[in-house]
Amino acid sequence: MALELIQLQYTVGNRTLIHPFSHKFEEGKMYAVMGLNGSGKTTLLKLLSGIWEKTSGKILWEDKDVSALERRERSRLMTFVPHSPH
Image (cartoon, rainbow, N blue to C red; front, side, top):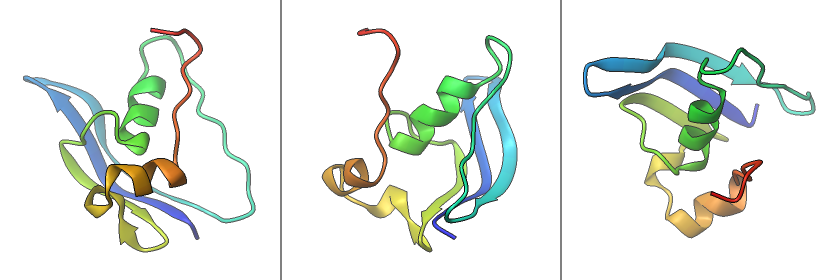
């Protein structure tokens, strides 16, 4: 297992955009992030890449908490490339 989310949550003000959830991504498998507009796909990817800081929970890469990694080290593991330049 390479990536694990443990009770990951993201809240802005009094609005929860990502409700607490956990998931283990197994090595060697391919995953897709799918959903309706506004369902949290981009928010999730920005949390994973470190663009936004999670409200609570953990993001583990090979059992290491990625929030403890330096930004440069984290960007070597995960990168977010948006579909538009802004």
